Image (cartoon, rainbow, N blue to C red; front, side):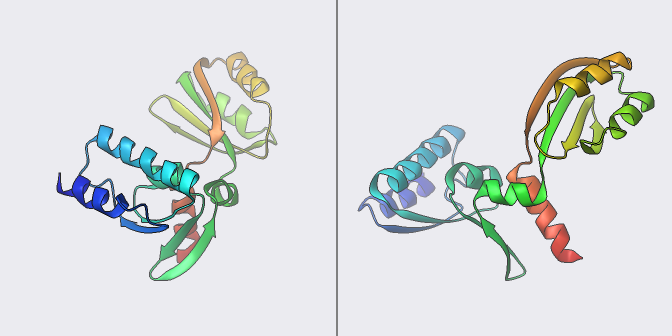
Length: 171
């Protein structure tokens, strides 16, 4: 309740610039979603600038038009979440199923559009080189004996991009 009250007090007079540090910390999921909606509406309808400090990258991805990544006080990247994802993690496909044998994985690795493959808990994550058709990859897998249950094409998350950026900075 204290967190809700503090945020309400900050937004009550409809400021043009708002600084928030972990605004959804301690809020239940319904209240957190309502706050995100309110902040997005304030920015869109009234042109307010919301400066958000958070470790919740999913929240930043939903709310922010610009994201800055800071490590040890040094700015290492800034841009729209899509730009940051594009720099560090290209398109990918998540495949759920069974029978991801070494022969299936070897056949996938041999394809020029496949950058890397990770397998965990019956889920195959395939990083792709550019925007490519996924159907030929699925057909190849099924032909090699894999059982494909679900296929989802997408991009790297902001969290994955953040981790890549931080790892690059360590080198």
